[in-house]
Image (cartoon, rainbow, N blue to C red; front, side):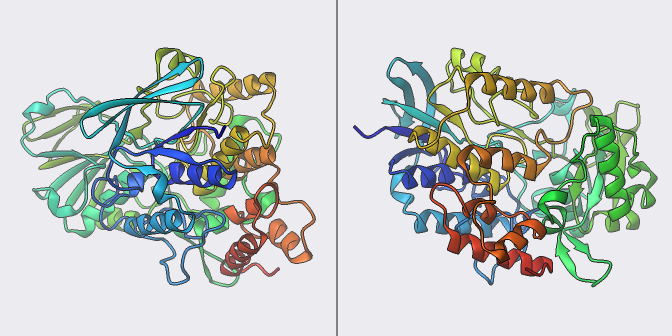
Length: 493
């Protein structure tokens, strides 16, 4: 009898999971609460603003066997990502498995698998599934501090997930709270619209451009192709150094390569002190800081009043509007208490909200899989996690021993309890991707022709590398993607 598999969510993770299941001959049942696929990339009710571009280029923000069109922007707009996901669903016949306007309310472990309770057209329904893939995304809930006095603030106040364009916000002076990826970019977006911006950030971050300028050729190379430029040099931290030494090496690399943002404004000076380096990507932020359009302030907002805010140091700022770029968190509140306890779910922990081997499987939750729920999900790793889950469900690969799973979960716990905490739990993209690819036999080292061996050794690490080998390999599509990325990075193969 065919297995029944529920996939929760029709964003990038849910679509990749559905496609991987179909490869294994398993038809998924996809639950999507909205009326459109795409997750955070949905233009109408997703979490992107109108002019938002991806931080990763089309060479890495891509699935292994579905390349972007040649005419696509190198750093696509959010609406372009939505169109890409629509085309992915069409190419692999996923649309017919998506149940729109089906909101999952509760998932409970039962003897025959999992009982999934959901709401559709105002009706409460339920069904039993042998397996469940939770792919509900890391942008499920907006994280926003409950400031003392916020009810007295007279201006506009909204979260970045609501922000679409500058004219949504009334007033000239805007306080942007939060200085990570979205904070830096939205501050720049507002400055370009003529607003005066105060950016309140917990700590300085390294500011990286979308393009790295090669000192020898002068060529502009997409940042991700530069940072993941060789498998054996994919991260400046791959060594036997301890954590503090790794952080020093990473920060030194960033300063030597991109300069210190403190040279633009002293408040932004980052220090090479052994703490985890944080970064944001923006081409215009430092320019706007230098011109005075953005005033960076290091500290935490303490309270709000009728005409502004105050930070913990006591300094006050008069502003007309507040924009919270304070991030998002996953939401696993629909899991039963036993399941939440098994994975040590902490809803307020944005770094490591639950514990699972490679954030995918847990020995106490046989039949439940988590895909794309780690902070900072790359399309390539989303796809690897989806393939691993599908192959485990289809019993085409053997799961790690329970002992090994527990050891890997203990590593996740160490990341959760690290002080100071890193910006991302799995910041070494290539190392994390390789660890999952190893489980499915997709490490690109099996009988490749000479050109591919050279591309793997010297070229950028892109998702296509993990489609060359292993189950359901597609060497034609993979080779095309790898060769195109190498050409763009100026790597001869």
